[in-house]
Amino acid sequence: MNDQTVDEFPVDLKLNWLRLARTRGVGPRMVDRLLQRHGTVTRILARGLADLPSPPCSLSTARCEMEAIEALGGRLVIRGEGLYPAALAVIDDAPLAFTALGRVELFETPSLAVIGARNASGNGRYFAEHIAAAASHHGLTIASGLARGIDTAAHRGGLQGVGSTIAVLGCGVDIAYPPENAGLLAEIAERGVVISERPMGAPPHASQFPRRNRIIAGLSWGVLVVEAAERSGSLMTARMALEQGREVMAVPGSPADPRHRGTNGLIKQGAAMVETLEDVLELRPAPMRPTRTMPAHTPPAACSTSDQMCKPVGSSCEIQLESVIDLLGPEPLAVDELIRQCQGNVAEVQDALLTLELEGRLIRHAGNRVSLEMG
Image (tube, rainbow, N blue to C red; front, top):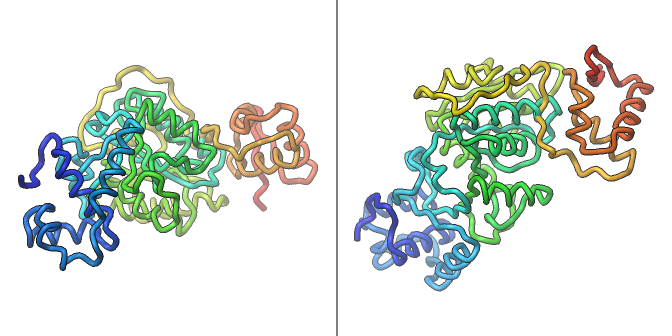
């Protein structure tokens, strides 16, 4: 059987693709070259072993992995199958195989990547969640990487609408990273979809995150960067998106906050500036209609991203103070929103604000909003 696009490959062919995907030193581009020479993956494994940089993954190992995926309720998706996302299939190094856990029908819906800083401000988190929710209600699926900060906020927003969300992991689909996102990962596996090209049980490793980022960009027609420092992973994803011919968008922010230097830089370099969902929808290749009316979200200058992804907060006033500092920046944030994101006792948050005020580090604004003195 040749390897043209079909609804689903037979098990023996899927196992052969998986064996190549798990062979050390073998990647999508090498397999493409080998396919030009040998025709199919079956022939590569039968006649082209001398062309491989290392012995292929054993059939028994591949079969064990597939059985583990099925036991978890997931599916192994092979490049060339009908289920494989069309947008991802056209990038130069599209994954040979990946594990999918959840609603695989979401691969047929248009995806918007929403990404940004892990140490995101409260305003950034609020904005990411609300614009992701609005986009999801308009039928867009939100793609992100389940990282702390903006990614977490984007996933939570995506789950609020019909478009839902896709979490692309740099570890196995059965590994929660960061650990505090275990509950969110389970929710996405049930109501959205979780994918990874890494094997089941594979731990997170820094070298794998750039590989994950190319998938986030590849799944999506556009990438929206909410906050990003200079030389950050989010900017790398934006560069990959440009190379893949995707739309790159960025949310402007205060030049006094280093978390906005990367996004402001993207805008200077020609990225589309986004302040509202309408800015996003105007850039989408095809017209969309909302599935239901959404309340207007607050514009970025008064926004923050609620993702309930603050650092774990205990009863310690010192920990609460640290959490409050992490969420504040030069842009005013509503105190009620700050309390919600910190998931802490109201009195503890107010104590933290008073401490900052006494130290001369807090600025109070009209409308019960606060910001940090950045001087």
